[in-house]
Image (cartoon, rainbow, N blue to C red):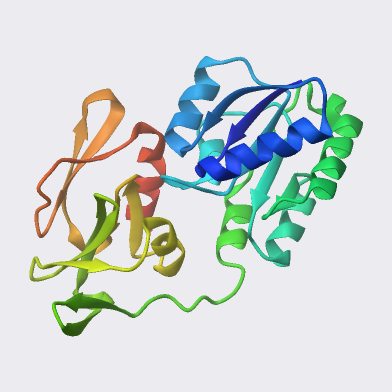
Length: 255
């Protein structure tokens, strides 16, 4: 059996491989991929595996975005830390799941289910429609972040969302850039921010940037079907939206 793992945490990749070795004798992990962009490229250029284990939160966004670009004609087992509401949505969409941290018994049951239904996927494709993605991401009224705290020497300052322009990661630190072009180190990862910020206002445009709609000065077409964003205040390097995220970025801008 050929297995593809789409997971951005190396420890989680290794743990899943360990459990698979315990549960199965004859299998091959054909690749481990950690991003939406690389997943799209992989599916476009490789023969489909027998099954895919797919994390929801990847290094450059949510795995649901992969289905906007490619058809995947094999069963998907999502690995997720989402609550029971989301799990029920997966069941309605005939997609199995493993709740993190993954338990051996749950993995074994999922593989048994796969053996039962795998013949149904020979000539069909799994897709997640926009309504389903919206239900998963907006399953209840969220309390989005209204302000952030940053330490400046021996002082503590708060920065409101209204005064925030964008976030970026650099050297294992995450910075908030304010409207007056000051850069503050904050104690969050970009992955955490993706769930804490209002998705109508903020978008993870690249693996290392989350931008606010009001901070976009200009957007240009760029080489290899990408987009180049000019931010205000300006960012020191080019901010390039990868090809796999262009459509979702444009849809976000057009809300």
